[in-house]
Image (cartoon, rainbow, N blue to C red):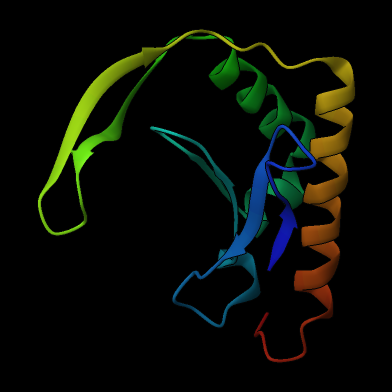
Length: 115
């Protein structure tokens, strides 16, 4: 389930499959070019502000990334690049917190998960 997409947000976030039916292991994913971020339900529930701090730290640093520069899916050619720091604003942090809280709510309400 997607909580935000790049068209209307700085973040592309979604509930990622945890290969588990245990609530605490469900994953909130922030998709990025290059390295992405994933937090478990247990981590977000226990320390939402700490997770947001990690997101701020992530975006404040340069990141390595590879992108498809030529070819196709059968014969891809990738090019490495360095993404510059992209510090998040207070509004971005508040927006992301809303997506994280909605994820927590959705996981808690999922009757198919075990606790």
